[in-house]
Length: 196
Image (cartoon, rainbow, N blue to C red; front, top):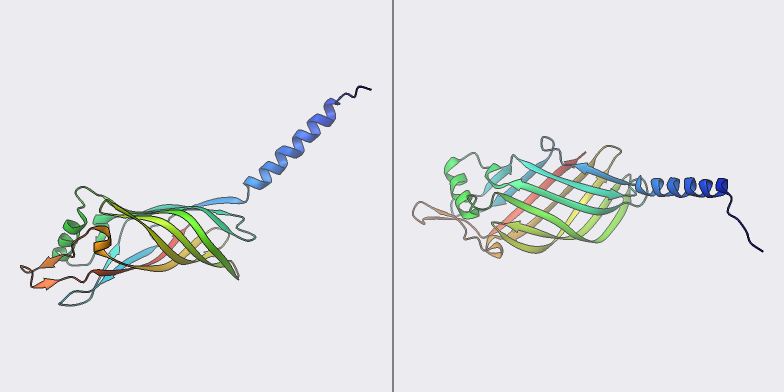
């Protein structure tokens, strides 16, 4: 016995399918980095004193899935313009830009490659362990980056830190005063980044 698909039933099925697909994609939300409300600092040492540089120009985005439930991150990237790193001392900045080879490499970049774990702790706060590619002065290394993610309806906030050595990125620690002042190899990045 031959059965016929009624046009009304087919159109109802299509409507249901489109509605389901629409509801699935609605759970994905992309936030863009707000430079004015974000802070990224780099801390280091030297034979003279400890120092800090602050990034004035950052950009990037984060894509969060199921933000209202158990959140997951499907994409994360950010960029710091290398010559926007400022210490308040022009001589030190000049040495830093030379070490970073900013004439050739304009930015410092991070791109997420994997979320290793994301653990909710309530009120839209998550502890995230991730792997990503960090590129400094043209050298790219895979790094483990851990941070806290705080989600609200309009914002995603990331807070964390990462410690590394300049020589891991083939950077010679800067010197000054004909080599009498030397910079320590180890650096620490601290970030409080707001995406909205």
